[in-house]
Image 1 (cartoon, rainbow, N blue to C red):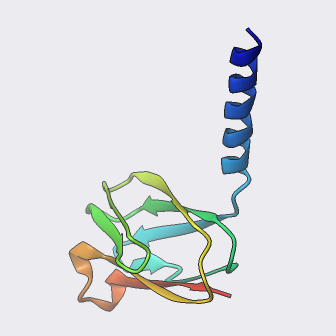
Image 2: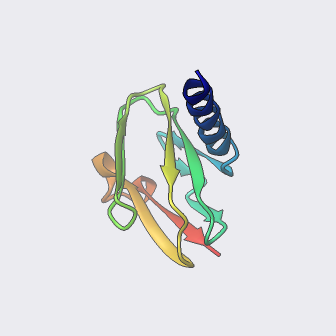
Length: 109
């Protein structure tokens, strides 16, 4: 019984830590990413809440950050990131990556 309680308490603690991550919002419209540049704190894990407000599905992809996620039109998702070193990290909507509207960057300070 004590082991079950300890396990449950540990699960709650992990869930609480996930909620404590700094959150940044990114919206995708037919015009592109808003904002196109996100500034985050270097050395700190964070989450990115992505809303696809465009009329078509998107594929959020960042090769430098090793993240890739298809998001349906009108849908939202959350991506969690490990702490980043200072610098710039490009991301794209892979379905429109050759267009300026399909490009963005996370900058860690």
